[in-house]
Length: 275
Image (cartoon, rainbow, N blue to C red; front, top):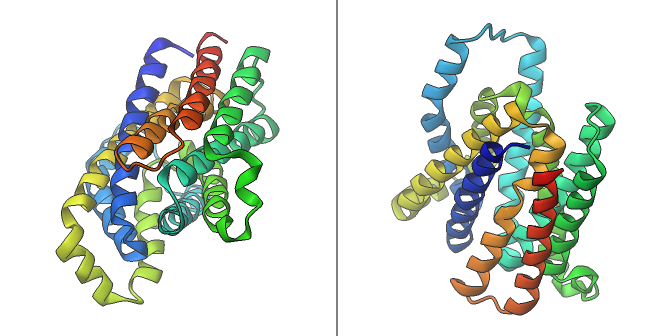
């Protein structure tokens, strides 16, 4: 992995953690997810035109199939993430979601795409995942049945991350339009909720759309110059940032434990960078 690729991923991590902080504060449900997804698709539309104009892009059945599959994963990601933020802390749901994603992405990349990470890369991936679960509280999160909802939603969100990470590079920007269409199904069941979100939360929705679109573009470019099995774990530096925001800005507590996990994550990222 080059330094420029790592720079792109660190930038994307700051943007990603930032919009998740805003999403946690709003916790607006499906209507809010649909609103900022629609705004993000509008922001990405010029880049989609540019990418299609400068390449031999073929909107055939395979392309559309991949776009729909990726969009379904991303729609599930946004809905489950909003539900998770209603059920628990940012510094629990976010690390679990971002930890499960690279674990499954790396395994799928090796099994389906034929990628072969080095031993240092594999060790780095292991440290990143271990640090994320340490931040989130480890197995103790699942001992109390009353507290299982948030971690289970975080893990389910991570599974969606792994799914769309595997096919984003092929489906490119078309997934955003399909994603917005799929999110319309639950959102339109409550049209009053959409108007309510527009009236109260259109500014945070636009802010999230801008940050998420920018992070998306940075990660897509990184995927064009580095393999998925390295990009997926390395972008998880956002967990360090998100954990800091959760424990300081939102005052979610357990700061020492979660920042210790951040050090483990940074060690894993260092191995990924030099591997």
